[in-house]
Length: 278
Length: 289
Image (tube, rainbow over all chains, first blue to last red; front, side, top):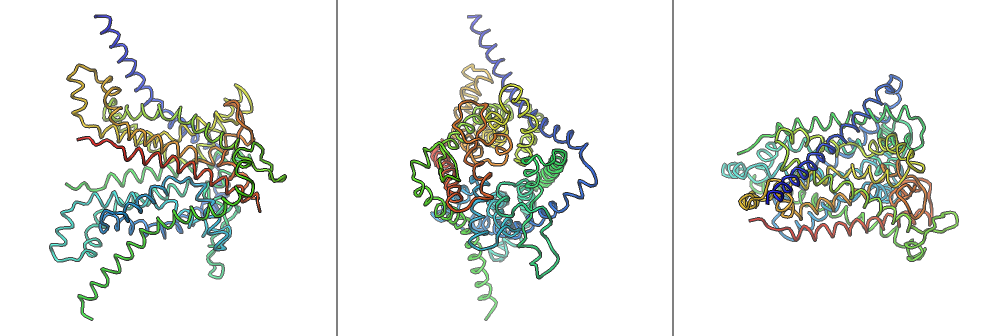
């Protein structure tokens, strides 16, 4: 009897130890990856390196701009429709199914699709426009879900108060609902930017791999929309894969990690400021 | 026109804009499916479904396109990643939801979230510089299925942890209290009551993790090598369904290019199968009263 009790106590301790160990390992993995990239990247940073990656940074910003330009309205409108207008039924189920599926499709498939539709069928070829449009579709599910979460957090009483004052539904959404979930929308946008910055597989065959800045100030060149160019993450992939320069790869990995940390930190800070409605 | 009609028109217009925007997602999904299948599926029949799916040789110059080695490599790597990522992820979720003091959990949780934000190319680079040389010390060239399994096992952790944690937290405390009342300890309650009660959410997290692993391209391209062969050991260099597209799409044309799109179709089908499994699990979701 006594030994059975003791055995059980040891078993409990063992299980509990495994759980603590797992939590520790998971946290340690992240710290090791970030630590390794930072420590081995810093010695390779230099002014000439930073000047060298400026075109890729510019291309990344260009693609972010194009993707968000379409994705923000599409995401917000879809979330508004799903949360404020639609009645439960086949239509909503279909839309949700599509959003879930899109979220589960790997980025390489988006890349191949973008190549077929934008590069070939619509004739944009390897270009910022093809890359930006492909990423619009890829990040749309994230945007829709984040905005919908934010909309759901706005209490029903806010809407009722506005409607009771005689405001129309549209005005209620514009003046009451959307302003109350501005932080949620901002978080969604920041997360979307994070995904675009880190994306490679969906861009290699859409925006292409040209080593240079695509953007141009000239209207006759359509601001470089139809030019090909590699983003920073694609650049990182190409130099690591071809072993062009491991020094540069280390430094680029560091830059990408720092951007990731900044973006995650910003998203965390902003969502902490999200008002809690009671 | 009075202001009331104007108001009604703008309300109707807005509603239609919102509806049109939300149909965009459905349209995008349809377009992706149609384009991929229209471009890839005919190639499967041109090559011959049996030759394509069961062929072991991939020689574009000789017009031989068999993808069995890549299908197997993709499946093995996903299974390996699952073997690492599922138990570690689930136990970490248990740690965060049930065991860790809230303050510690609030410290660890953002770290796991951060892991989700690290670009896959950086994870792959880490694998290339840190794991591959270590594996080379043991056996082979280092670029191997094993390296890909470990990196993907790490990359699917955030998905498994966050969804499993949500599921564990949704288990009503009355379940646990009943177990305590029967004399069970805290830890054995977790394993005998809480985890079984959160089963469907945990399985969902596994399915999403597996989907992420099988579809990952760049990280695998950096660490798994590039040899078209049926893998016989975890130290083998392999090419997967995703890396086949990544490596060759840039210069392929004609039937070769269409065969690559056909590879993507097969990948797409595998992911749809995982998604169907996912929605079946979701529908079975137990209702906690």
